[in-house]
Image (cartoon, rainbow, N blue to C red):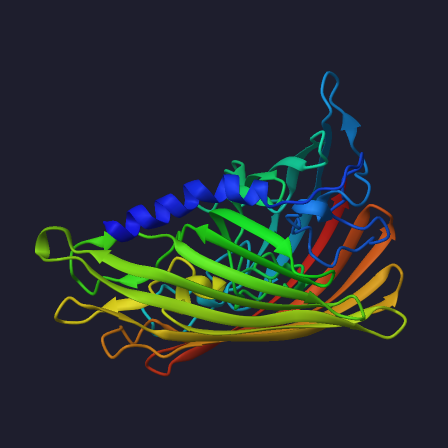
Length: 425
């Protein structure tokens, strides 16, 4: 109870302290989130959540004034059509996650290969920005797509991706977690992006600032939305009493790349309800990632590595599963170590033609009490070619191969082709 009150007090005190500490420079323009010269986005339209002076020191294209106020607004997004040709009977017909690779004999009903044609990744966003008299930036950002996986096939209702506000250097709302490095996310056509990646979108309150012109820091309190605890036949559910605490450091390199170091600590807690006392333990994770450019054509390579205890709930490939912790026969929670590794390269063959190769892997050190039919290790490889025949049009194709291994040593390989056409507005 005392710990809960302490975290709540910190969150309430964070807003006035953060705003008072800021040093603003007046201006009348706001920063764009995507360089105009990028016809093929490096970030797959993962919006960077600028705060502070980074939000001010450039223009805000495609925006218009909201009459009667100092604010400006822009509407953005894209329409994307995907054609998928699956050769192995993957269990998700819209994106290829490592969990969904077929493994013979693991209890899931096998299926044959198939095709699918869909537009679920299409999205739109509303971006509203303003500046106070002292030059402090204000922002509200909302983005939706149609990847609502709880709906039946072809019933594609909108899904909220981002909703947050920025007050100076303070961000409040739901967006990419502080431990998510968008500069190290692979450029793929597949929506899952070779999902052995670190970080997800979360509700949070975050403060960030600069140590120097090249070094930034941030710290935040966030909601661990998928704790990933296996109750192991004990009635109950994950029920947190503390938020996730996270900090990061980023450094710009001399070639305009970026280095990223993140550290998270969080509670893993299981409410056994009427069967006994609650049980909890501390989880943690650390990561190092980034991207660096080379040659005059601005090719780049990216990398991502992390390790932690109870860290499975922070690796996208095991999101929504029970890969963080398990209850032993005494009803006590045991956290499981987990890691991920990834790298890739982007080659700018011409101003309108880019090829990307990416591979990402993750693994767990499972408890002896975890079912051996559950996933233990997995990886993916993606090779694509993306062409921009018109300034707002991207097309391309991608070949992907994924591997899944369960705790009993059984494994499977999945292959898939995907083609896309995307109109960016």
